[in-house]
Image (tube, rainbow, N blue to C red; front, side, top):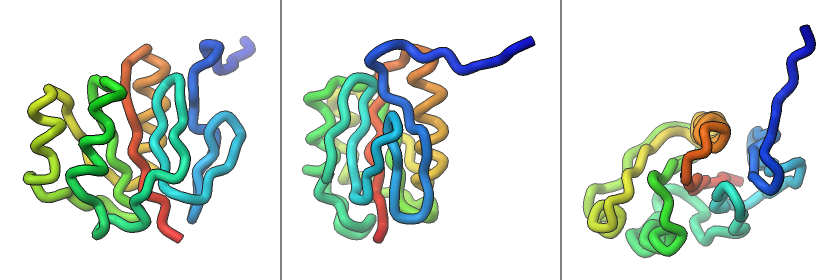
Length: 124
């Protein structure tokens, strides 16, 4: 039996990740970014977890995801609840995890046809 990954045309998948980079559809990004099923927003202006603000997260509301996967870098961290107020008010959930876990989870949810956004912090 031959097994292979079926991908919907025009849908983003994370094809690789490692220290200091994420690849989306085989294109490498070395700075923090937002990934949606149909769009990539390169150079999300969050260089490190400690520089994350509520405004950075509120910018995701316009994309109307069901949920946001926040990749917090090399280790899992949790943003202060006050940073999540805008998302919560819009009915958008947020799951915080290390960036590699967020990459894997994004692919699973996109394959299920979910409207998910991955906000990935890529640490230099």
